[in-house]
Length: 386
Ligand code: PHE
Image 1: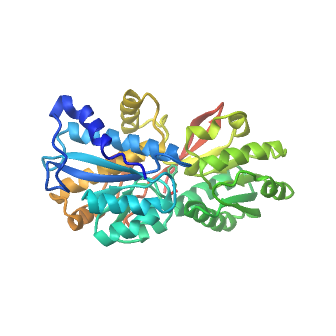
Image 2: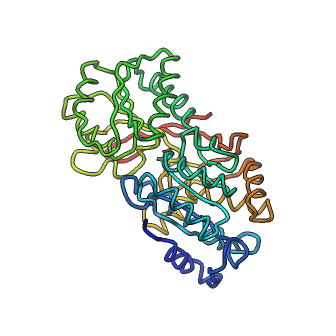
Image 3: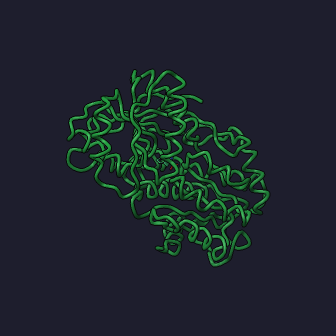
């Protein structure tokens, strides 16, 4: 496991030094000079694009929180562990952050499978965990200390994408390609299927693969014989690009569509990728060309700091830290149980991804956006409300 926590505070100190001076970070938890917040993220490995974006959003939030004077008179100090997008690493990362670093809360992960891995540990230690963007329903069901600031896949798959396929794509006969090694993919498949069929759609082929597969010709050939109106690919961006390329090679011309797992610049990078995905769609949480004042101000700040436009993970990474800061402020303490209660009471909190109220199951009810790939760019198309 790579160790980021030593230089992240140094980096942060650089950002806030001009305003505040850099405080000693050697004290633990909230009893020291800072409030220690842990983050675990896929900074490297197969979903590095997710982890990097989310991390940048979180860094920007910590920067803003500290520039505004911090919380309860103390600065936030972010300690980050890289789980390398690998199974088994998230539990280790979160244990370290809690036991060794004595963080008061955990932010992470993007991928549902890795949030699920960390949740029992946060629950056991009674340290609130906020996933910025894990959408699988099981994540927050792991316990009353586990929260998220995004919508769930019952909404993304069952409402947004099922409706989109039937009404906007006018697709009646859909094929599905699932990554059975990802909790995210399996969940999204289930919720989509239920509502798509209930709405009059027909699933004409269901094909599967597992993480690290590179050749999808057999699955795509089986799909092609069914001649579907569209192919639903509720998977992460890495295989999505490969599948799109191989589908076009096999002469499959129908639209492909997915969920937030497609959200990465890498999706359309590399020879032929943008062409293979031209006109295709995916649902996500945020679009930088979305015209709300909060979104636009965030885009401006993020661009100034990182030299690129933020995506959904950047925006949700930002909101996860802000929601935590707001809860600690209202709790008046960093004590786990009280912060938990304050998080659960979050109501109409204005984030950059929209207004958030945490429901009794510790989820945020929020709208989704549909983006279309045009000329290698992700273009905002519509907002779908819960
Ligand atoms: N929702 C995905 C998951 O739960 C992760 C993700 C979030 C991907 C946001 C892209 C954007 O695994």
